[in-house]
Length: 315
Image 1 (cartoon, rainbow, N blue to C red):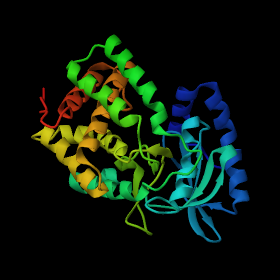
Image 2: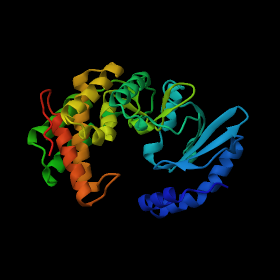
Image 3: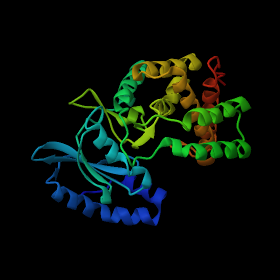
Image 4: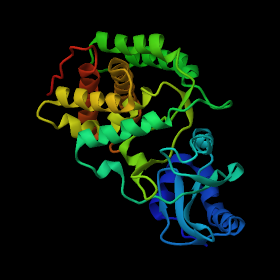
């Protein structure tokens, strides 16, 4: 029987309540049954992300990891994306049990792209992976375009209800991106949460993506998810506006995407993050002066990305 990490257990109960507690009680038994079913034995300490435990394993065919996620609609299509890629820029899917939200995966290293300090390298690696992951979509995967009306409505409500320091033109630009880009997107699979922490060093290839959302849409969308996770490092640069723009330009070139399209998606992500932070906080801060600084950073980032000649106004 595995021992569920305390931090993971506390976070699951805080987020999911009694349903999460019940799932945690069953989790060691679920893992035990999967190990037996897939002819695996544990091969190291149990680790975890936000919603899943990761068990390193040995099997007759080699090593791997067993991943079991909390049952949630957002986790449904991860194995579908991995199956479609077949190891192309992402970890290989060895086996799946959709009813238990479980997968047997290729083992990568624990080191992530987030540990790389060179922003150009981070953007280039992520861009090359984004290009390779953009394959024709299979039926049954969720389409980002189907969220366009929800995004537009949320932007209008947040702009009316929440205090913020973004000029009206910044919010208008985000709404325009939804209207002009989000409703008409290509039929390609995209990661959906491509950031440096979801890109691991590996043996088969230098870098492999993990934890995809398995959605269909514009590959330029992932430029925004990548930037959000890197924003604080870039905003600490001597010239934040130039650092942010360069980061996105390097990503766009490596991904072979239109630079302005990448910028516009990133701007939408930044506006959404600014509003989301005010309603719900951020993962690294839920309140107090640090949250205030983060939401102001998000405002400035969104403003910096609005229009080709926008300038970052640091405070």
